Image (cartoon, rainbow, N blue to C red; front, top):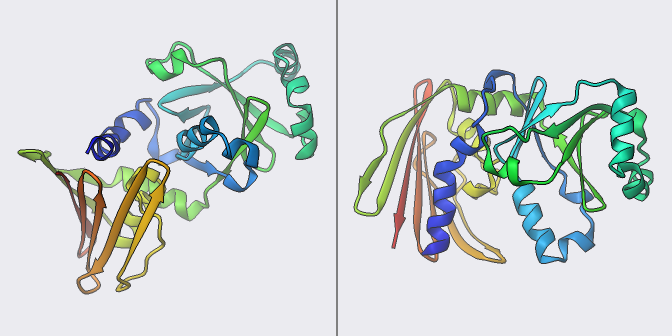
Length: 272
């Protein structure tokens, strides 16, 4: 029950966490974690697994700002000579020498360097240690963390456009609450069922882990260290998809309905 409420509360709060900054969604670039580059040593520790869970969300890059965990990372505008000096003084090149050699990277591969804004309204940002995010010349993002380099790959232009449409072309009705049930109804203009589903699939908390096709029903069980979820996908013709997720403490229902040039999404959270 507690896990169910925590997961679904996170779903409700996510837009306010991820978009706390004054960013123009139409110009967002998105990056996702490159899990294949993570070391086995990191993945074998409890702290490492927790870190991967925290990082397994889209990073937003908007002009001179990156948004991660609701925290703004501002581009360092100083000269490259000064940036190089700062990184040297912080011990970056010494601490990450082996990692940089492993990936054949030098300072010349750095395009931009961003650092967390300690004056942000985000408590997470203000309480975290000094942290850098580096844009590389291959258009990947790199985060140095406790002796390891963690990489994020930019999504395709088609995926970025779809996610931007998802956030820009939505109109939601007022949330309905009956007893403990919570129901949201949103309309996504000029988007198909697959468009909306695919955009939502990049948010891990939605648990949309499978690529879907119209008319393809299936069921599965997802088991993680702290969670077990049974999922069912059922199509009602080609214009309606019902997804049910059974948690230990409740059920989440998603109903997608294609209506001419828009998709209606009904989301119902029903704790036991």
